[in-house]
Image (cartoon, rainbow, N blue to C red):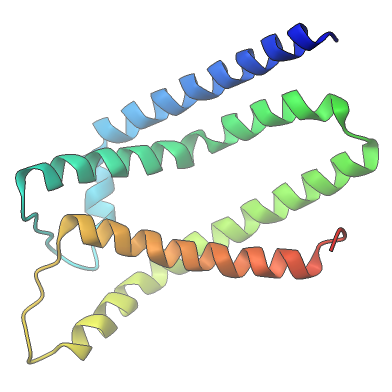
Length: 166
């Protein structure tokens, strides 16, 4: 392939990925009440302290949810772009790594779903008697993201120790 053909292929893959991301973001935004009902179960009620906080929190939730649901399409587009340049053993390592990444992601989400109420309850118990909890919508979504990023950091550390390229 010529350089221009590579750029056209890359553009096609990026456009397909952005279309999938846009559709997923719109879908999550339209179903945001169901997503919020699912996420706020451990807290019972969330508050917002400024008018734009609720709107931007919904936008942030739609973006991250859309990215999560469009990730298979995005990864498929990346695979279709990069796989012709990879050797057979590199493809095998990549497919194995992606498979285990999804397995660990699934277990991390199951862990988060099952233990998030305990984490929230623990945080409430520490401040018991000093103040009443009034959890901001924006800070709650950020808190869930921080827990998820710590799981990601630990997983990345484990992968770097066990990587065949280390």
